[in-house]
Image (cartoon, rainbow over all chains, first blue to last red):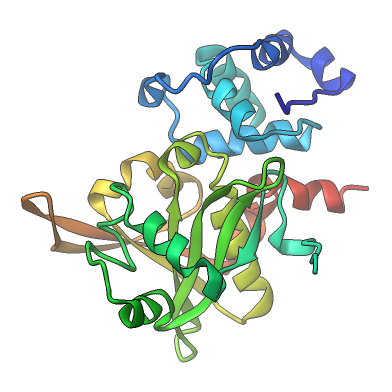
Length: 85
Length: 192
């Protein structure tokens, strides 16, 4: 659904493989997910998407929706990778 | 005629397309949606056709539709207005579809506009005035990017009460330090 992850990125962290499998899973958009409970706001989520894009991901709107539903594992990786806190 | 969009107005997720006269009806419908109608430029109004032109363009320096790269979907409008050469400052409004803003996807349009402004004009600072009720989804920008310059207390009436309007600034030096984090296409284009 618009996410292309290169082999280097997939090899860097196990959770990114989970990202790929989740995004590629067919199904309806997760539009009923209460985004605010995930702990990140829109600006932080943009930084996370930017991080993935910098590592080769090609993201569309659907992939972005899927990514923000991953929650805690996504957050932990991002906080280590984007050292702004 | 097809015009290829490249350079600073194209990011990893979205690109900026100038708002044109043929977009006015769409813009009015879009800006009248529930989440955006209380904000600038309409502030709850549905102007006359002549008034719509003024509402969309009065004081505007640059105005773009944010378009998704993969699907061509319009994600929102970003605009720069009220530029002041004496203080070398300009204000921006960010008006995005709430779902695409919440994921962070469409926010790239905001950052592309900021980059365009600092690239083409000698501004020292880009400012935003945002009603308090519209800021919670973007609050981490206070820590990551923006300077708190205060608030206009109980300045805006919305849904039965007065709300503060927050004033936020993005100095050029801060943007130049952090732009590659927020615009991944920039960093990939400049990486060796």
